[in-house]
Image 1 (cartoon, rainbow, N blue to C red):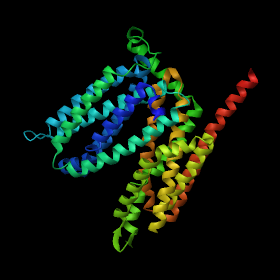
Image 2: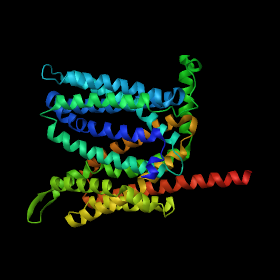
Image 3: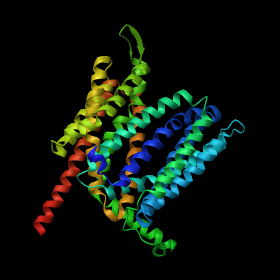
Image 4: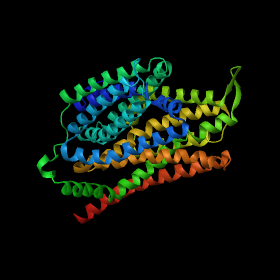
Length: 418
């Protein structure tokens, strides 16, 4: 508790606003695909959701640069105002008096754009006001709150989305207003290097400066190797909702405690187990990790995490699967905070927003590999997919090792030159 209270006020506000936004957002957004599929059809919905992702990703590059130039707080407030407008109109378009799926989608697209605009600024702000000593704790608490908010929000949304959709959109709007007030009146600007408007008023100079920012990021080879490493490892997690889900639905059927259980039911139990373990043991594992060197914890966590998904790729023994979720969850708790701490140490101060925008590509790339797993799994047997998962994990772990090695080589070369 003392460690949490000692965190910078911006961190505490961001942890609170992130938890509230995710908690309420997960009452709605996981079910929007089903909503749009009923209104527009499955094929059209797939295209619309892809457009959503691409729009958010594209705007994030603009948001990352502008947060470096004009300040984190200003960008976050503008994005939050856009979200208030989007949620208000989504509520109006799903009221008892008026229904418009078209307006709902346009406003959802606007909300995705605002999220893409805000996220690099929010992530860069956390790095700005944290220290090497408290970053691992900060990211552990953030990871814990994210998992808790997603789990709780999804459960409530599953119960009430169809019957009380208008009420949920009203709650989203009120929550956005509350988050805006916290950002506007209690959060401090963390980017002291931001420039004034007149220095970037010329559009040509603005574009040129933005290009230079991203050129700095794209020539940071250690950072790019780190991004590739995390992409490869994270892609295993996205297989849970893709190849692993399909495999279990086809192959698994067993009696568990005298109850007939199919693959989808087992999958839901495994997800609940993972979430409960993350929520209950995040802070405990964080305290335990302090006694060991970060790099040892990182690589041990990567091995444990990867081994869990490798077994999930082919095994149909339910006891083994439940055990491997424990193993992979422990690995997740060990590697994620260390991975995020590494990221924070790499992001150069004057272009942190740009670094966070590029880092956002990791999640999109992992989603793509997760989708490709379904296609490849149609041709490879389960043991073949397990071998493929093993290759992905080994490549990811090696890239993490190489990224750390590049840092050590850089330090040695500096010592020699001095």
